[in-house]
Amino acid sequence: MLKKSIKYLAAFLIAMFFGLGIQSDSLANSMESLDFKVELQPDGSGVVTEFRKMNMTEDTEIYIVMDNLGGSEISNFSVSDFGTPLAYEPNWNIEASREEKAGKYGIVETSSGYELCWGIGEYGYHEYTVTYTISGMVRQLEDGQGMNWKLFDGDGNINPENMTITIGGPKEFTLDDTRIWGFGFEGEVFLESGKLVGKSNAPLSDSNYVTILMQFLDSPFQPTLSLDKTLAEQESLAKEGSSYNDEEGDGSTLDKVIAFLAGIIPALIAIFIAVGFALRSRAVNNANPLIGGRQRKNMNKDKYYRDVPYQEGPISDVAFLLNQLGNGQIEDYFGAYMLKWLREGKISHVTEEKGLIFKKDASVIQLNAFQMEAYDIESRLWNMMQSAAGDDNKLEEKEFTKWAKKNYSQISSLKSELYTDSEYLLLEKGYLEQKTVKVLKVFSKTFSSATPVGDELMDKIVQYENYLRDFSLLSERQVSEVSLWENMLIWASLYGIAEEVSKQLEKLYPQFAVENHLTYTDVYVMHHFATSFNRGYESGLSASSGGGGSTSLGGGGGSFGGGGGGSR
Image: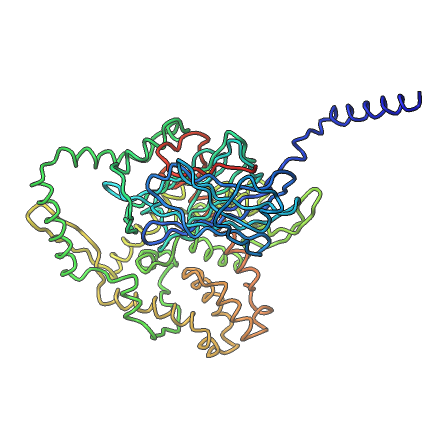
């Protein structure tokens, strides 16, 4: 009787155990995170590294399906676990035991491609690093280059709770030359520091996949494989069944127009246009256009100017010249003005405790002034910041990013006006002059050229950056000139080097942090707020112009690669 009662009790407890929702799935294999890092090579191949944090409770091996390769090949496959390399097994046997597969990896050829396999080893937590090279990830198209690749397929796979993607190349990707989209998962993709950066906003499931479409308008690669498609055709195929087609305008109008014109314009007219543009370009070069960029910087190498180069008006006056040199981006100006407002007491940097359970300190900007009525660049930037802060006049980084993402069109207008207003002002003040060239009576171009005083100003701007970058020269300043250092830091922000200059000043002059209104911590925090502002802006802009933003759960047609698999 006692034994029977024990059996009934055990059965009851087992039923309760599963009745409470503790399913067998809780003991199944799982993946905490999956991080993709792809380095695209000049020939269009990609070195892919997967960082997998996994908890394994069953089966003998993990495998990745590589099919639908479209002519691409897999090479340089390797696996490590907690940083310890696994040994390559040339004759991989999927029927071998877990003990036989432990510490080893191999490749299985299938009728449709490959399976990249490795032994689980001991059950429990693992940190696998999987690396392989895929040839021909970037393909040559009729009017550009593109990569449309499925990196992961959740169907029957061990799906990650969190997923990130980073894709870099032989040169930095820019919004002007690169279009990006993400398909198959809930998340976002955007350009940051010259790379594609993506992340999931929800755990992946069997219905999810990760496909990335990148299009390169400047054709920076020398691909070994090609597709008989235009950029617009590739984009259209990928967007079929996606939420991108629900948006107003798909960002491909220019591609469609170009494709249409290319189909109807006779070859003779096309040649005429090509010759006309070439002659116009030569005429512009012969007319002494404004010299900027690397050429201007090379002209002023090892030359120094020790005072603020422009003091006739606000720093926005020279935005056009800074932009021609690759400096003075919108986030640089925001950072510079934030330092100016901090010095003037219009804002304060405070630290507040955040979090309901896990408390941590967070930097907050307290606004101490109200909206500015003027319509200049500084006032408009201030009013943007105040709008983002809300009624409490306290601004957090995440708040700033969210506001900028939502109001990207307003920022785009300001960015455009920043440079055009500066150019008009410099023309009025005699730093620039307009010239017009015309060839074949049809092809004309009006452009700005520097006058002698404009050339001198541009040289000073470059030489002042050289001075700020050469930290050894900063020791020339006397302690009595501390009041000038704040202006130096504001200008350093325009060059994107305020953090380095501030840190060096505090090393050279310990009293700098005491006497100055702008400490290194302040500079660091203002820089991060400006970066958050720009990240939100680029994310919002990219979603509307083929530069990323929110991903689509559907679409991604025409892609290569597989990314399926799991464990067995």
